[in-house]
Image (cartoon, rainbow, N blue to C red; front, top):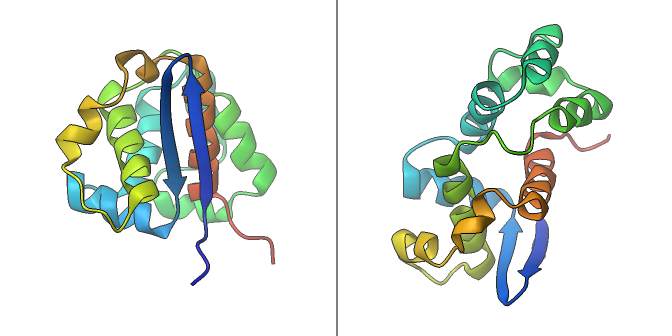
Length: 146
């Protein structure tokens, strides 16, 4: 069976993590944390972004996840680019990273706490890691060109 999604291995100094984002990520995120991944991405963007991002969300009339469907790829990219680099919800970042890591090793079942404990603490605010996560955010909220 063909595997879809985005696969990345992130290396910083001696630390390395493999991330995979695809449809299974949504299921694993929900099963581990009891919340919907798309809703959390939108909430993350709204609560932890700059005034410019909030204005962009208002301008594009994004109030809920379903509103994303009306965005063009350029508008989606524009929203993601306005997110400030260091004003993040660390719990969401850790949960999202752990879900991407769990997807990368699926179908192996892992304890989510062990995955989170294996994430180097500085990954939460490292610019390189955040930029990689933005690419995963874009994957999850963009639409396939038809």
